[in-house]
Structures are given as C-alpha cells and as structure tokens.
Length: 167
Image 1 (spheres, rainbow, N blue to C red):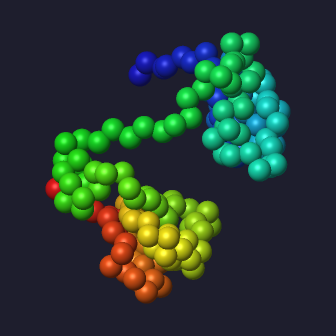
Image 2: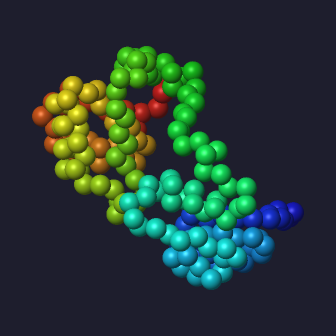
C-alpha cells in the first residue's frame, strides 16, 4: 500500500484525538488551536477565541500562521450547486424566487442541537413576519424536525423537506 505524504495539516478540531493522530502521521507542519487537547503536538498554534467571533472566522484564523494570509482575499459567501434533479424539486414547491428562509435544525450530535421550542419560536416569528420557511435535513433528522413542526400552529405555512430526496 502506497502511503500519501503531506506537508501540512490545518485542524479546526480541538480533540486530543485530532492532535495526536496528526502528530503520529508525521506531517511536518501542523496547525491547530491553542486550547485543543494535546495542542503541544502542533508545530504552530492559534488562539481559540470565545469572544463572539463566528465559527467560520474562528476557523479561518488558523490561516494567520501563513505569511501570505490576507483577510481581504477570503470569500465568505457559501455557494450551493444543485443537480438538475434538485432544481426540479425547487420548482415543485415554487422556491425559485429565493424569497424563503432555509432552516436545517438537525445535527449529528444531539448535544449540539438547539431546542425544539427554540426552533419553533423562531419559525413562528418568521411566519408572523410573512416569511416563507423551508426545513431541510437528512433522514436521520426527520423525527426531530417533525417534533418541531408539531409545536407550530400554522404548519401549512412551513415546507418540510427533511429526509426527502429530489425527484
């Protein structure tokens, strides 16, 4: 089996396992947060801040160790490229106009999920403001999202696409 050789690793994870596995991989340049478990195994560390900074910006701060780093060159707007099948799904629900708010309440880790009541409260507020709301997620999120929808009075004002595949 051919081993891949890497020159650098940038890890936003703060687990002991991430630090240790990167160290064992013998990657010569390893960047991680100073508050990571076993952070001493990184060759460079960056302060992990909890001062209201957005998670994306916190993770991008790992790039500041590079001399070429220029915050002005960062592109922060996400782009989603849909397949033709996925585009058709949007047509079915008349979602082409981009006049809706997309919410993905699920999480792989239940401990990182916000409360059902919290999501229901936000959705209720959006409905009251006349916003169209679309809920998305994988099959594993179906039950959780259904429990959120069950808390709403105007269920018909929410499009729940959780667990659905494009047709």
